[in-house]
Amino acid sequence: NTTVRCRPDSPYCKDGKNDGSFKRWLISRGFQAGVIFEYNKSMISLPEGGASTLPKVVKSSSSKASSSAPPSPRAGAKSSSAPAPSTPPRPASPFKPPHGSGTPEAKQLEAEVLEHLDSNGLTDMGSLRQVNDLGARFNTLFFQRSKVNDGSWKRWLASIADVEVVTDPARASYHGNQPTMVRRRAEKGD
Image 1: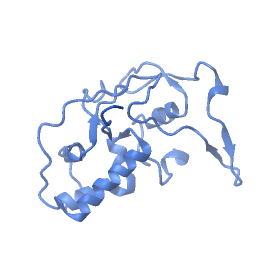
Image 2 (image 1 turned 45 degrees about the horizontal axis):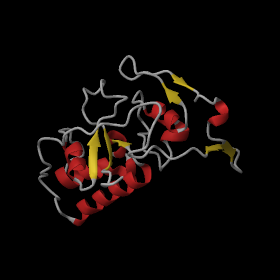
Image 3 (image 1 turned 180 degrees about the vertical axis):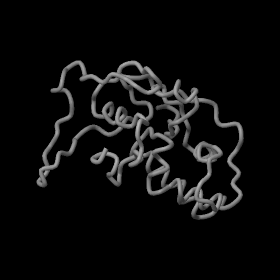
Image 4 (image 1 turned 120 degrees about the horizontal axis):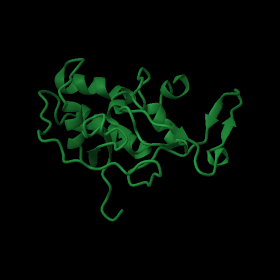
């Protein structure tokens, strides 16, 4: 948790626990996940080729280990541990905030989301709120409150051009098949 969650470029909430992010991190590093049981549990194992097929760990000059693991999976990438996320229908109600719509600050938030998705691919919606404090800035800009829990974050993400909210098949049963992930919409011909 200290090594991964507390990094400034980490998409995971530094205070999160039991949210499956450690499992996703292991999978992104080459480990294989078995079937999900008891909502979010899964057996993790080495890939077929054994430990030698995992990315190499390189020691830095400060003697701390850093991984040369491949980047997190992108939309459309094939994964041997789970099927690709399915795309649900867009949320029924449109995003109509009481404040800040169309402002330069709103455009800046959208640009930051798109930049993060371009560099990190498929991202958990809850974890995305922590990136550059996007969630708190969203609440302040559009609602002028510190906390909002009405589904507006998901509706806003779905309203951004070239962004889609998707169901994570690994956690779908736990979340009632509701979308919990976000990614850039694949361009036609990909």
